[in-house]
Length: 297
Image (cartoon, rainbow, N blue to C red; front, top):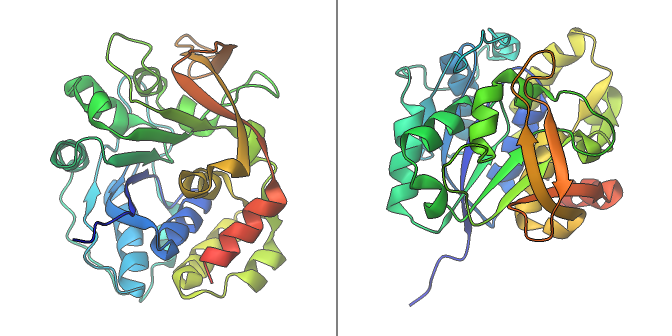
């Protein structure tokens, strides 16, 4: 009897703000080793974000992937990310539009419980959905295979990273700074490595020829029109390292999330050989881009 050796991945995303979420989704849709068991959206206009994910899935014939709209508001602070600008480029792209509000957390909980020890939860947006999930069902972390986050900044300087500061209280929960259990593996990709993976706008336009990237080209023009000179592949790096972890080198330790202004959401790393958190410290950017475009082609 043949078994499915693909990696089960749940993607939690704020697609529609920074273009790299869509670039990461294109990778997951193209990666033959990925069993994308669901997509959830988070932050302002989550239903419009779900439409964007739907357009990308439908374009490659993957209407079977469940997509659910999640939290529009952060746990305890005002959500600074209130709109999904790239949704303006949806235009005539065929997609679902009937997304009910606030279904993401229950969908995540149900899916992880259905596949204990098998699911990788990949978070590439502010961590509100993930924080609510872990806070309301404390058994979930132990039921995951691993949690992979594009989140934080750990080594190059002390400052805030967008996903981490977008909902600092949810970030603290996701890093197990409270009393909840932790996943068997907890791996972070912060600005220390992702900022080394950049392509200029003209090169992106030239290289985004794959079918999975065709809607992304339209979304990217909104990104470029707002002044971006290129695309930093923050989220695609985290996605790719699920399948090719040796694209990066890692440090083991403990991450503490600060919760008081003006540093709320900053991530502080401490080396610890048996620590619960693995954090990417170095990346081979050339190998990463070679891998990405060998999959998305």
